[in-house]
Length: 45
Image (cartoon, rainbow, N blue to C red; front, side):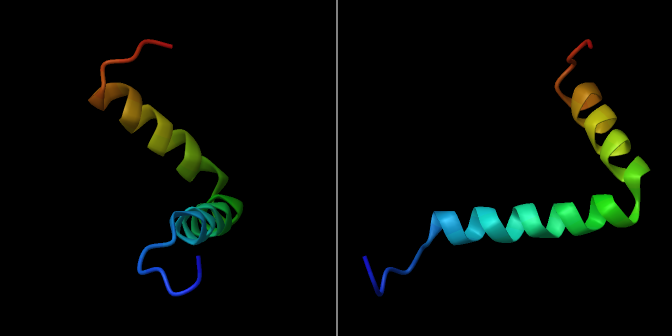
């Protein structure tokens, strides 16, 4: 397992940490992101 070029778990942790920091600084950012995703994929909810 060591020495692999791509580590999906590490990548997901970095993404989660980045989003967590962003959303804790600006709580409305999460709502805006979710609304944009709903519009993009035409999800009603």
